[in-house]
Image 1 (cartoon, rainbow, N blue to C red):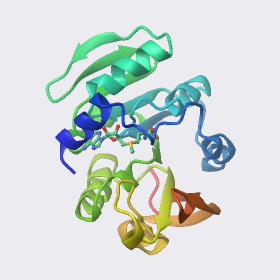
Image 2 (image 1 turned 120 degrees about the vertical axis):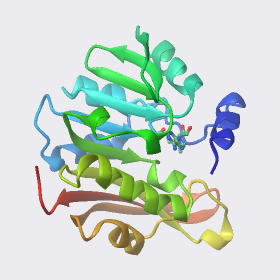
Image 3 (image 1 turned 90 degrees about the vertical axis):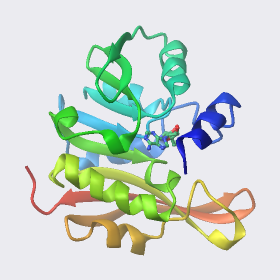
Image 4 (image 1 turned 45 degrees about the vertical axis):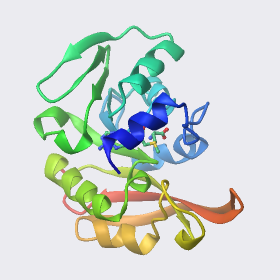
Length: 213
Ligand SMILES: C[S@@+](CC[C@H](N)C(=O)[O-])C[C@H]1O[C@@H](n2cnc3c(N)ncnc32)[C@H](O)[C@@H]1O
């Protein structure tokens, strides 16, 4: 999945993945991660997700990373937020009180950029990526955070022969394959429904580092 693919999606407003409200699974399961108030949360491939507003309101500084400048500009406008435009070496973006929005490639994020991050929230990030990039994603996450912080990860599984991604089908076995050497992996919730006429299972995973910070 090249950057152009996503820029085109945003330009054409083909953003069916965007949820108008806060994700209900986040609200229900975030407390089970046990992340302290005031602890910063990384939201990779954040789009213009309302979940960042909720995490922020819940007392977490937020670091969002997103390829699309339009997504971040819309996020600010639609939430009536004033962000100070910022230019970093690998990212442009915005600074707000207790919120940093990086515009650029997640794979360019460094450990220094993530200083202070104590948890990760992944909804529609891993599943947005094709198979070979998913392994890179898991490896990069470890490279920048050292597999020392918990993650709440919402995954999707369906018969990939019936539909092309994204979102891609990422079975539990793959989540385990990607992370099991570094995290304890627990299913907190799983629910099957019809999505575009395809039976789809949405699963909430808690990833607890085997070697916490
Ligand atoms: C499926 S959407 C999910 C957005 C958000 N997590 C949500 O729940 O609405 C995936 C997002 O990741 C962005 N994206 C894709 N590849 C990226 C990358 N390498 N670095 C940063 N953002 C990326 C896309 O522009 C898109 O907004």
